[in-house]
Amino acid sequence: MKRVDLAYNRFFQGLGGIPKYKPSRKYSGWTYPSKAGWKANTDGKNGTLTLNDLGLTIKMRGQAKFWGTPTTLTITYKPNINAWYASITVKTETPDPKYGSESNLAYEKIVAYDLGTETAITAFNGSEFEEIANQRFSKTLEPKAKAAGKEKRRKQAPNFKKGIKASKRWKKANKKEYQLKRKVGLARRDWQHKVTSDLSSRYDIGVTEKLNTKGMTRKAKKGSQRKKQKAGLNKAILDVGFGTLNKMLTYKIELKGGIVLQLPTRQLKPSQRCPECGKVHKSWAELSNRYHVCDACEFEFDRDKTSTMVMFNAANGKQPGYGIDLDKRGFSSSTSKASKHTGSMKQLGKMKRQKSRSKDGSADTPSWP
Ligand SMILES: [Zn+2]
Image (tube, rainbow, N blue to C red; front, side, top):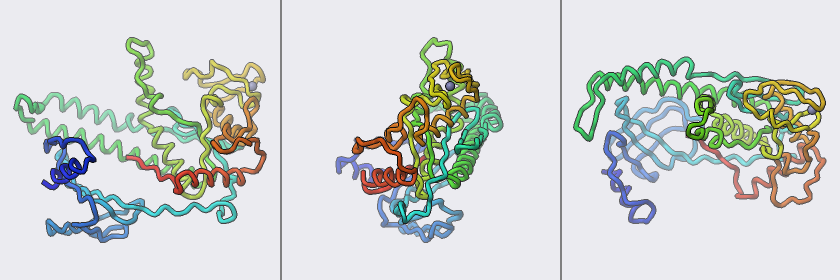
């Protein structure tokens, strides 16, 4: 009932559309939209949650990654695992990033990274390469989930329109499939946090290219021969979670006071440019082309490593055939037209951060589902 009240309130306040009826198999639960009616007695680690209207106090176990002032509470029921969930939204105080003389970062540790499918992250710090292998969860856990799905298809599935109820066996198989899929998701998230925390702890400046995963995972045209190939690549891209790795790295580097430079991909062409002489080779863009040989200067190397070299050079203003304008080096700015700059990374870092701070007065706090 509470859920309906809330929806109608929103409707009358002109915030939402006309409330729809949500069948309980899709959604059940309710939200406390303010601090009233409940209390979280915790500092983010263990504690209790009290619901005034139900006269309930529930134990909370575990530790939140971030904690702050609790603002809203949502209670949901997940029928497939027969469990209730309480989710608390907290407002966190973003610490003011310290820069310039206040910061203890030297902005000398720079890393360029490329996110790929074979190798999840290829990183280059100017002298050494680092390759973080992609954990193919779908290779180990997913076949199990797939088998569970197949098992499910042989059972009596529910059909609400025809009034057919699911068989017990179907429910059991459905639960198994769900649990396996959940396991894949949790393992992936865990791994993503581990690798991004490690990399971001070691560098003050991250260099990457502007990513567009939406475009990258777009379906191939109908009837295209590349359809199957593209589907496989899409699967791999979504599997590694390109977007998530990128977001996590950016967020974690910025949280400690570092900066992340996003290079303009179309201008730089890091996957087509030779890091030594700067020549752009269109044929290098082919995904099947994993090893690059420059016909102008005889440079040769692995594709992913080559692009991190180009990105590293570009951010440092040392890529032949490419400019040294600040925009081109990822210090995007609309105000600075006098963009020829030869200052140190520390000075540039200061500028970049002052600019991004002054835009909205606060640091970006990206979130992910
Ligand atoms: Zn070359």
